Image (cartoon, rainbow, N blue to C red; front, side, top):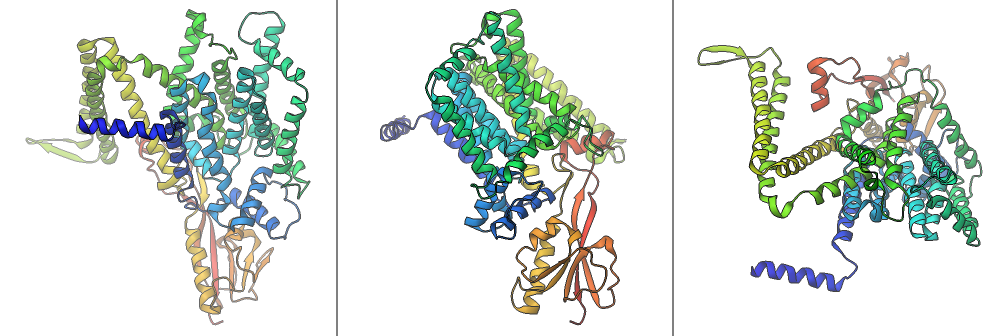
Length: 615
């Protein structure tokens, strides 16, 4: 008791010394620090892929004065961010990815702005879900505009909802700034704009027709904005200033406006069929493979909301202010899912358009369920049931893993009876399933429906959370360069680091410095090789290396088969690998889904470092 009293006194002292530090704000600090640690730690672990190298090289050449404007195909927001970073902090893989990593942290903190609508616990739960989201984490560690678009889209919604609810003009400026940055960060922002515009237009027309409901706040807010002198003009100024700074690189290259406009064209063309693109099931598989926790919790909340509107409409009407945030999130999630499925171009980053609204809905559902469970009365019983369920579930998982490992080839014997080891593991897995059924039946008999639903909900939440952590860790850290990850599928091989180390070592041996080697580089090796040889000032880039180079070293693709074998010796390094899961069936498919184990990736591009035998 004395220890507990001293702990309480310590908490009170901290609260008195820092009155702003509440439990809720401490939770957001933890969520933000967790997100930052996951996103910035070992940010350069995985080598840049081709798309990343193109973006990084464009910014590098502009920063060092080689280029006067960004080349076609660059994303203006990423270009501006990297020009700033390369100017202030130098170059490197981690430096090139700083803006997506920062956007990922901001995305995690943005639910704080919706706490008055999601609930304090709901908004905090949404922040932790986004912090641990495998897709949000992966694209925060990737030089890609997807996470920046997701953060800008959520900031836009947070700003609009708050300015309607609270009539604070500062939130209108937040929405304007988010829109200005978003339209220069990636084509996905236009999907969010379309969804929000359709929803707001529906509410506006509903009110104009005289229907009763919670859409009346939109025309009222619009009228107030027009009445407040200069408000819309100032918001427009924020929009234009943000767009100008992001798209035109602090006004240094006006052509960035054209590149930003190209993003709208890219978005429109993404609906056309794409030859060799991913199948329509690809985004659905990504959601199920990586975002099962958010998808399940979000869908449960969507179903609950739809059912409540049918059975008890008064329960579905949100408290004043009455902008229907839940309806917007439901529409956002379902409409975005439809868009990314029917589009012809289906990049993996598009699933963030679905993950973000589902995470907010999931957070709201978590708070609702947490309040419903009778913790004071059943906390001990729920703890016992959950621990038992977790133990049996782990046993079931191990039996499935063992079955997939041995298959039907291994045999075992017991008391003189020989049988397939795979059959034994299946029997044990069946026993585990029966044990789970008996556990939940016993929980219902023991304390009734409350224990069954409360214990079941918490057990499922913890099991899905463990799956989420496992799915998150693979593509971000443990298998960051493994194309067998469904979110990756094609990437730069980690051997590129060995290649660069070899070039540096050769340079030190021949000239005494790591970057002064005279080397001829075939341009067809691509942007990845160009990025990693960026510090070699004496390199000669040729369009096509077809004979002996005029330098002591050369770099080409292995497929070129150069006729210089007599005077040069070469060593190959895998440059790019890919892997496709579409031919997997049966046990191989399950093994890949559960453990990411499958056949070896295919090396589709190899680079060769040629060195003169007797320089």
